[in-house]
Each structure stands twice: as C-alpha cells, then as structure tokens.
Image 1 (spheres, rainbow, N blue to C red):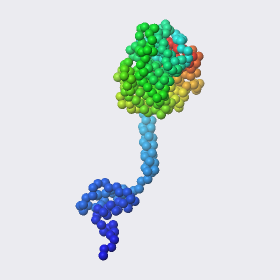
Image 2: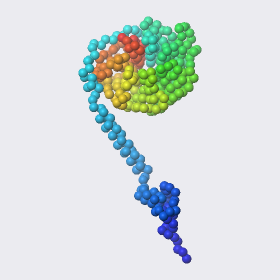
Image 3: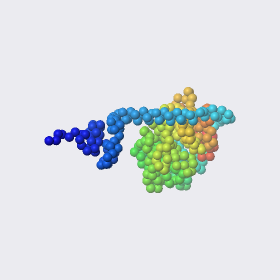
Image 4: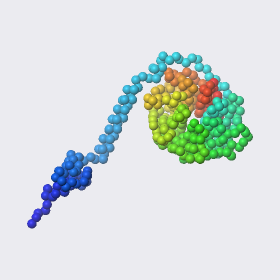
Length: 402
C-alpha cells in the first residue's frame, strides 16, 4: 500500500510548482511554459532568488520616491552647473541707459468703472478696452475719439483683443464666453447684432488673443484651462490642461510660425505650451503668489511675468530657468501687467500702488517711475511700432505714454 506522496516524489514540473507556491505563500508566478525535458525547475520558472523575495507595496513606493528625489537632485545639480553667471554680471560692460523721460500724451475717458484690459490694433492707432462697466470701447488714440462702443450682457469684461486684420475685436469675462464683434466703417452700426459667440468655458474668461490670423483665437479661464478655438465654427481645436488653479493670463510667441504660448495663473506657475499637441513643454514655479501677467521677449527666447508677490521675473527658455528678478524693498504692491519695449531693453510694469515702474532688463535696475493714475494700474501694452505704450487703470481711464 502506497503512502501519501511528498512534493519530492512527484514529477519535476509538479515539484517546481510546489516550490514556487511555498516561496510565494500561495501566489504562482511562472515566466514561461512548462517544458517536459530534463532541464531543472529553475530554468522553467522564476529564479529562486526572485521567488524568495517578498516586496511589500509600501516598500516599493518608498524606494521609487527616494529614486525620484535623487534624480531631481541630480537634475538641479546639472542645472546649477550651467548657472555660472548672473545676467546683471554679464551686462556690467553694457552702456547704462541715459536720461529717461516719458509723459502722458493722451488720456482716454469714457468708461464708467474700472478698466480691466486693453489691446492695440496693428495699425498702431486704434485701441480696444474693456471695463467693469460692461462696455467694450474702440478708441482712436490720436484724437481720443470713441469709434465704437458695445455693451456686453455682463459686467466685468476682463478680456479683450484686436484681430490681426483690425476688422474685429474679441472680448469676454464673467459670462464665461469669448465673443467676436466684426467692425465696420459705419460708426452707428449696431455691433451687438453681429456678435458671434466663439468660446465657452465653465468659469470666467480671463484673457484672449488671436493667433496670427483672424480665424483662430486662444483663451484662458478661471476653470484652470486654456483653449484654442476656430472663430468661424466655434469649434474647440485644442485644450490645454496643466494649471492647478485659475489661469489669469497668456501670451502668444511673437514669431509668425510660432506654435507656442505661455500662461500664468493662481497656482504660481508659468507654463509654456505646444499649440499643436496641447502638451506643456516647460514649467516655471519661482513666484510666491499669483502670476497676473506674462509677456514674451521680442525675440521669443524668453518671457517676463508680473506677480502679486511684488516682483517681475525674466525666464530664459533656452536655459530653462529664471535669469532675473526685478524688485525693490520699497515695492510692496503686486505687479498687475508687464510688457517689453520693442528693443527688449526696457520692461514696463504696472503696479497696484498706482505707478508704472520701468526696468532695465539687462542690468536689473529701475530706470524710471511714472505717476499719473489715481488707482491701481490693471493693464499695459506697448504699441506695435514701439513709439508709445498705453495703460489702463481702476481710475476708469486709459493713458497713452511717450
């Protein structure tokens, strides 16, 4: 009479299965088919060393975290090796700027509440502005005359933009939409009747900008996203997800073939996006508060940002890092808007203390303070030909400086 068979009395294949079961306490992990040749069980199943290992999930996560932190540290060390000199040190031999004089040349009055946004037409003469009073006004900056006025269905029109052709304007705000209004030579024409709703977000519209044609428009929103839309059909062409809070501003790369744009938001991040893929290709997080404004350097190789932390900063896209901070101890109010001069040597910053600070981009020093507004400066743009810039304020006015 045969006794009960032990694991050593069965076939080699069954023995191997039994060994793996014992080692893994019930979990079988074969690596291939069972061969009925004379090769040992170690060749047909996981090596005994691996089979004997018991890795707890918590241990694996801890190891991966440690590995990622180590890699991050190594990357920062490599970045630091490239950071061998400061921008202002390189610019020490550059000639300092001479006496700087800019004055208010025109004051545009007509809004009944805070001016929130403005943009120049490519003709270097016309300006579109939007306000908390719910109105969008097209101005002739030379004569200060109003050419068109549109009353929006909501107050807080937080975004406006001129089309590249100068034949349309886009705007939006608390209505969560971006609407496009075609302009005509007839100043008495009812523009509201020709309104086209192009973009729809799930929260307020914070900024908008046409691409290099009138046919596409880029928007940012309080819903934490940016989006690219087709103006004619209103179709969503691409969405951009990556911010963890409200997106407050955006700017399109200056090159005509540029397919990137930069955005800033309440998560203190400035992200650079590829418009074709919808992917975030670079991200910078050195500000200590909301980023209110971003603007590309004229060459497209860098961009500046203005933040509620009372600083403006310059980021070099090729070096993939922050290269300059524009701040002074006496400046304690946030920067609401920034823009470069046409040469890129000056950076204009509008602040919540009613002033406009002018910075030498290379040397990092302030070269002028412009006074005139009676409330916080909310928006600022340099004209296309670089001969002037316009600022909008909560004092209900816009000022053209030159």
